Amino acid sequence: MTYTIKEVAQKFDLSIYTLRFYDKQGLLPFVQRNEAGYRVFTDTDLSLIKTICCLKDTDMKIRDIRQYIDYVMAGPCTIKQREQLLTKQRNKVLAKQQQLTENLKEIDYKLQIYRSPKAKELITAARQVVKNEKSLMK
Amino acid sequence: MTYTIKEVAQKFDLSIYTLRFYDKQGLLPFVQRNEAGYRVFTDTDLSLIKTICCLKDTDMKIRDIRQYIDYVMAGPCTIKQREQLLTKQRNKVLAKQQQLTENLKEIDYKLQIYRSPKAKELITAARQVVKNEKSLMK
DNA sequence: ATTTGCCCTAGAGTATTGTCTAGGGTTTAT
DNA sequence: ATAAACCCTAGACAATACTCTAGGGCAAAT
Image 1 (cartoon, rainbow over the protein chains, first blue to last red):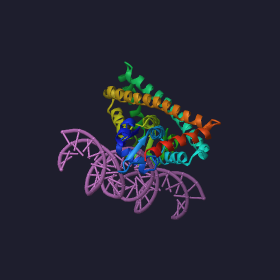
Image 2: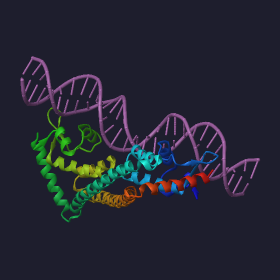
Image 3: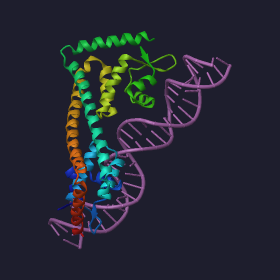
Image 4: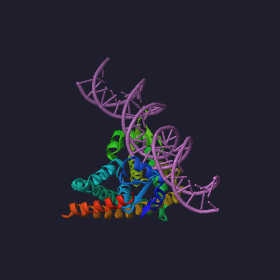
């Protein structure tokens, strides 16, 4: 089973432009071409693209994704490096998850104020405090 | 208690450039100036900057953060809009958390292969499959 | 008083990640 | 056989978010 660039774009919710851009950046060296020069994607290609999307979704820079792909293309002797790279990314994801949990707490705290029946009064009072604080500065 | 731009930058792990950039983008309309034109940050300013950082860390665009700040500056009559804006952001954070969990699974799956004692064989075998797949295409 | 370090603005420059256009060939359906 | 819908490349353009430079003022220490 093979796929056209359009089909792949749809599958991964990317634009055709983006896929071509990724190819230009060296992220898709494994994609073959047909006689007409069209890209021909196989199922194993899709599986690698899935990994690329996974790394991209965790905010890995294209340069670093390219490093990973380069390791993959280089064969089994780069397993150690791949493991290191993914372990580093794993830690980044864990840190990001923790941070998002913090952020969520902060947002929920704000929302709880906004949703309180006393929201208007609370905020009006807080504004008055700020006003005094600022006027003292002058 | 007041703070200089340098102190605020250190507190939030931002560059002075970034703080000035945020100001230029309308994110810090609440920050007063002293006689010399220097920015003077108060504690309540810091608390708002914390919120800005929180929104930034959850990938809100500066344009949208500005919208939120504009609502805050406009006073209590914008509580509904603020709540809507933060609720939307909250949902984005929840979605991102779910996605990160998926991403983590994918990374862990890969890592488990790389860490397996049979990693070299597994990958060598997989490469052979791909090689055959690709050679069939020609 | 002068050096050092901090502050300011305006605006140029940079990095990243796309997104699109022009110009041209291919494939499919009518 | 021709129109419609694909595909290709090179390279221009754009959005976002900084980051830095130039030129100049202010503040604290020597």
